[in-house]
Image (cartoon, rainbow, N blue to C red; front, top):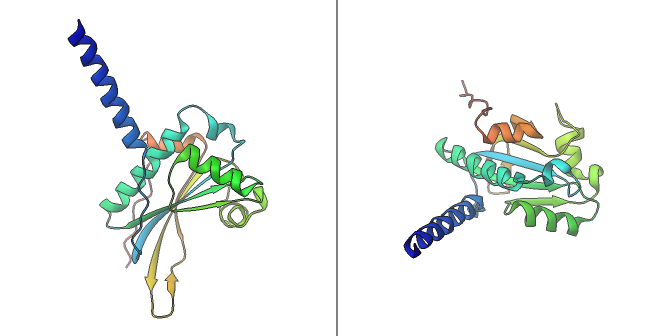
Length: 180
């Protein structure tokens, strides 16, 4: 009986460690050059969809899935976390505490912030809703005087439960277009 209890405890511990490991996205700390997949996750601390049980794990899987797909396609990957809270510090604390690591973060000014303008109000097809996950392709070219960025090419915009569908494999990213 004791052996059975130990086996069950070992199995549960192994499962917990696997879930914890799956949850971690490792920030990219290498200077990028060339094509990259760039994701933007937009949320709010008061967003019911973002606060539902298990959604933090959905975003963790989305980050690791996108990073894996980028690697498979020979692209760099970065993910930006944007939280549309009024208080920047509270927003960053919420974002990082609930959703883990990001390569970049932005917070503050609610729906009036620069990221809300760029990714929602001024963006073609922008949707005023949270949560959302937007995926772009772009090229970064370091030069002697700075870095040249190609225009962002929208690959996908997932809003609300569409994020869950993407992670579940029910929706795919648009295939990469080869340049003529």
